[in-house]
Image 1: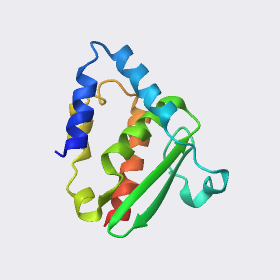
Image 2 (image 1 turned 60 degrees about the vertical axis):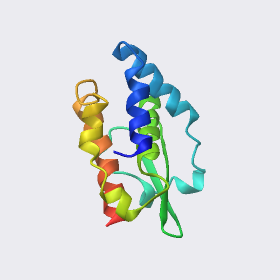
Image 3 (image 1 turned 135 degrees about the vertical axis):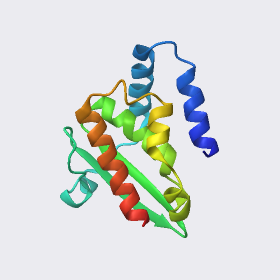
Image 4 (image 1 turned 30 degrees about the horizontal axis):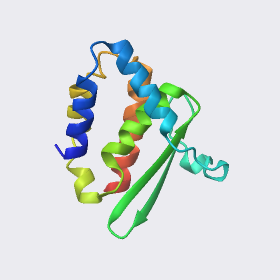
Length: 132
């Protein structure tokens, strides 16, 4: 795993219970820059999410940069985690990331509803499709 992922896992390990982790995820979401309204279009929308989610991809040289927004705070926090993991990396680096392993290390599987988990994996699939 890369340094950013390891740092994220260490941050989650600082909290004793899941209520604190949820608060941290929401804080991450509050820090996520909002997308311009012009970017909240159907082509940027991620399907299979209960909440509305938009994902914008920009390429600069070899690296892909991801920007995202949602109408739900917990989802915005989850998007912030995804962006920390994937944004600013090359397609090759993105393809080497095993998100399911990260998902399990952060213990999100046991603490997100099935619909939130499915939505999160829809975002990941879209990121991975773009990097292939």
